[in-house]
Image 1 (cartoon, rainbow, N blue to C red):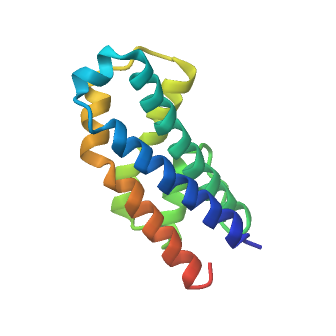
Image 2 (cartoon, rainbow, N blue to C red):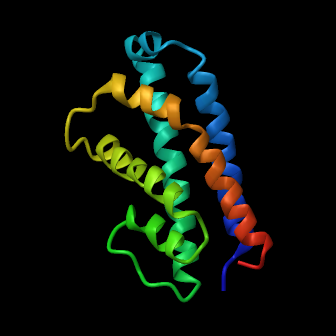
Length: 141
């Protein structure tokens, strides 16, 4: 059974981290890149947001009769296939898991300009995700 309180707490964490990210994004990309404290804070906040999203996706998938995804990124596809989030949105937001993995595991050098531009352009996706999950919970998810 889905634990609504668990998911609501995770959504609250996402909202908190989102506003922290907004504060950091008040600086220019150059200011963030030149200040390792700002840069590491930005990376960590992004990681925390994505970690909370992964936890929510996994919780929903685990406690509903949905097929298990082969990886965290595919969790968005599973949610879309089951009308929890729209398919187009799932395709748009899913790559953030790969970015999180590259940040955490340092698999490869990250293009900081591209990362910052991408997050600035798509940060509203995190708020949209919250909206879809709240809607899912409201309709009895």
